[in-house]
Length: 218
Image (cartoon, rainbow, N blue to C red; front, side, top):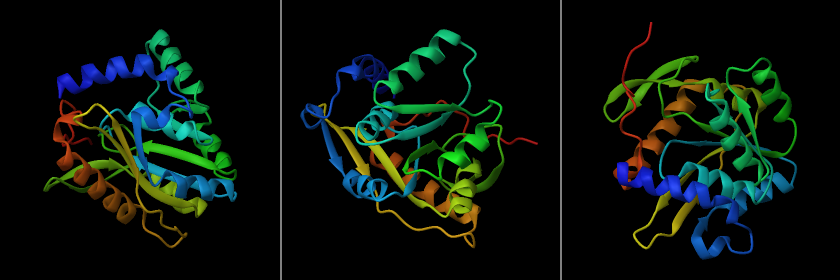
């Protein structure tokens, strides 16, 4: 895992060199065309993922194909926050800080416009959460993104990236599903968490295992 994270750090530093012209030289892309087609048709799509592979590479690949908004934990290190946000901006990715005033309103308004909205939900964070199964144990998982998608009645799907043995990045966007206001955000979060678990089983060394995923909060 630490070897993977070290490689990812150097890849992130190189990311501004990635373009639509050379993307296929470094990246195998599956299913993104379906998402782009929906965005081009005027739809909003909520993409769920986890801290699997080089997730910044995944976001950058999507950003090169259309507008992407991501939510992140607000960082106390100003220089690091500016670096990450600036890096994403080079691919047209807009970053929203989770703890900032008006973040929820900004996302709700954004869903009314075509684009991709990406959320990583595989960590135990201080947000509205529910216990869902994860590797055989119940784990507190944020349900806000699922609630947001259901409220907007938008398309949802999962996407993952993994580094192959030959160094290529393999980006996969899974099938999209429709949501309606009658859907249960906990059930949707459970389905997405199961997909994240499947991806971790594929390449367990490319997940951030040091995070205390199963801790409890009052």
